[in-house]
Amino acid sequence: MTTSTEHEPAPATRWLAFLPAAVIGLVGRWWLIAGHQPRWWRDSHDYLAVGRHRLLSSELWLGARPPLVPLLLAATGGHPGHRFMVLQVVVAALAWAWLASELVVRARCTAVGCGLAVALVGFSLAWPVTLWDRSVLTESVRLSLLAVVTASGLRFADRPRRWSGAVLVC
Image (cartoon, rainbow, N blue to C red):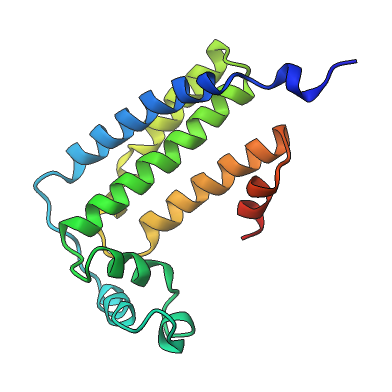
């Protein structure tokens, strides 16, 4: 009889898959936004206005816009210029790298798993995905959250733990 720990990869395996994917994602996304200004949309101004409310105010949490992007705008000092773009790039690169590393581990570090991870990182750097990194909107954050939830689902399916289940529920 086998236990789940016999099939659990070494922590170094996750890091060996995560680090190259994160570096490629960061460099690729940085190259794609370099020299570009943030794109403003009609909704962008609404997010900025909601983000100026106090942290515990009902205007922030129950307002016209979901609170995540306004909170991120507030975290960048309320100046959604390049700092907000950089924050979106970092979050996206790390989220997609985590998903890529989970695919490698799930495929038991085979060539298929590595191929899937390379394809996923390539997909994450495709224009229809990265174009949102320059926009002051929720799309980049939503795509990053999709990658995080998917990675957490893979981790939870492989080895159920409270934190990965909590990410799936939240």
